[in-house]
Image 1 (tube, rainbow, N blue to C red):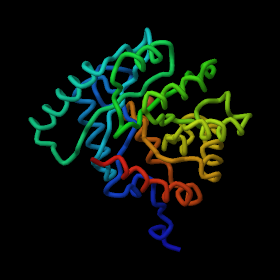
Image 2: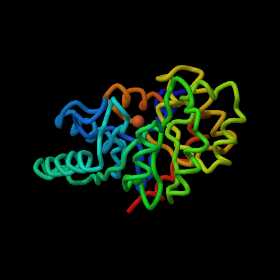
Image 3: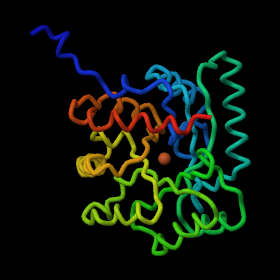
Image 4: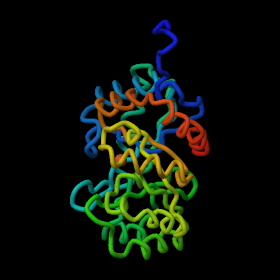
Length: 246
Ligand SMILES: [Fe+2]
């Protein structure tokens, strides 16, 4: 057989034209993502090469680590958009939300601020990688009482849920929407994360996807997702992100 016919189609060739990346760190010098305007542009050019032209930038909002506010985030987006216009890279649409860590600061923000949403009332939230917050279910309840819909970032990455798969069903029952990191389909985060990602897909628990891109290395790994069985599981889900188009 000619090698041409054996060439594998990577995940990065499968994005629908209306795909919206709902989780990314392209705003420069605001969190652990892009470190400069030039790096942001280089990353965005690569995303554009994958056919991704709609992106929501979601900088971390995390107490004592990344204390970003809606205003600082919006200013960064305005600066990046102005730069893209200057260099005539306009075939890409960026907007902003945030990736809110569910910590004590979040509980305060929820009571006092208007949160940045992905669209309508959907907010992107993350949990500590060490342990789930003791008041997790109370916070999820309060989020919804306040009129928001919580989209949980990368549920497959919380190792404390890995041995208790029922917890995922419980989170969904408590009103969480699940956003899988596409990078979890590579071995970037390790085999147990990949295994849980595939189980969540098989159980149809994943609602949306995101790249969670911070740096070039992440995109290198995204290009390595080529396994046909994995692509068959993820491809039908990619279409769901069109919901976030504006
Ligand atoms: Fe993130």
